[in-house]
Amino acid sequence: MEGLSAPNDTASSQSRIFLALEEVLVLGALAALVALGLASKAPIFEPLYQSRLTFMTVVALCGYFAWEIYRHSTRRFFRFLRDWIPVVGLLGVYESLKHMHANRITVWLGIEPMDPLMIRLDEALFGKVLPLWIDHWDAEWFIGLMWFFYIEVYYLGPALILLYLYASAKRMAGFMRLRRGMVFGFLGGYVLYLLIPVAGPLYYMGEQFTHPIGTQPIIERHVFDLLRYNWDAFPSLHTAIPWLLTILAWRYLPRWARYTCVIASAGVTLSTVALRYHYGIDLVAAVLWTGAVYLIVIWMEKRNWNPGIALRSPWQRENHIQP
Image 1 (spheres, helix red, strand yellow):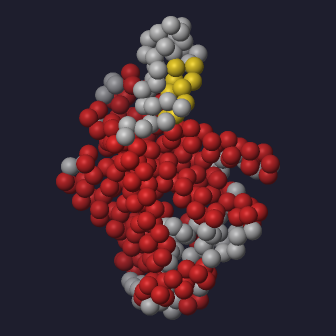
Image 2: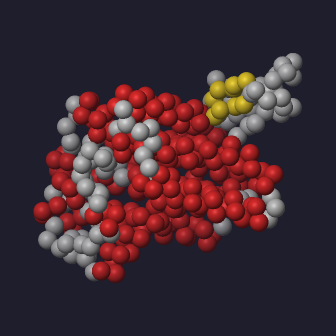
Image 3: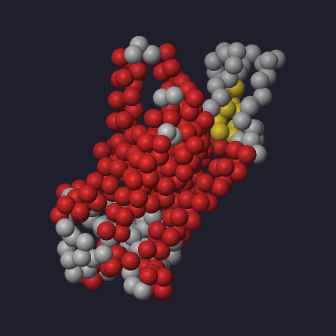
């Protein structure tokens, strides 16, 4: 394992490519995805248009790269790929693992759904299940706004904030910080989904809501079947990821961007309850998960501890590529 600065072996005719810890974790998750796909005879990746985080990120990256071409600045193309492949790979692997294999893994582990426990915790903390308190918030304009936060803001937000940091050389440290936080946040959250399966109030106790709310077509097709993961409510990554990116990027953002991130994160958090996808305890767990990942990332930075693997490069170079 190496630190952030991989050794520069001048005696060797070959340079080395350093894979940081987060890149190694993404490769490990990819290996697991391939193994599960081969074992289940399923496609390795789900269709891109069904992987919303991945799809929206790819769209944003295409727009950014088109702008770079317009500015005649394609010399950074290979560096661009080197920096962004771990991000796109993370999102693609995470969504494919969750949507295509998580049900099978949860059943294999034999862990029973824990919705009854979450209901009891909500009742202890809030008097009743948190979404029931706002059951009557069913105005059409409000529900439409909640869908905007839940889908457009959540799925496009990470790509936009990463691109904002990436576009400035002075903020590259922030980009690398957020990239690491996303890997820890998503992959760790996936493991928690498997170990603590929770369906959420909409699916588990939907009959207790007395005010119906409108749904978008994509959600109407989001049936509770084996094609999607049934128990991905605890913790609420819709809550954790926006807040995690906000606090990790805080020192690198101007005031207007900070306000935008706070409003976006708060809106996404509210949408998880207003649309009845999460219990209150899911949000509490999300806050704790956000804090845990943040502390780990900052702890590694302060100690300049950047484990990874140095691999021999097949290309002759004077300097290795270092994230």
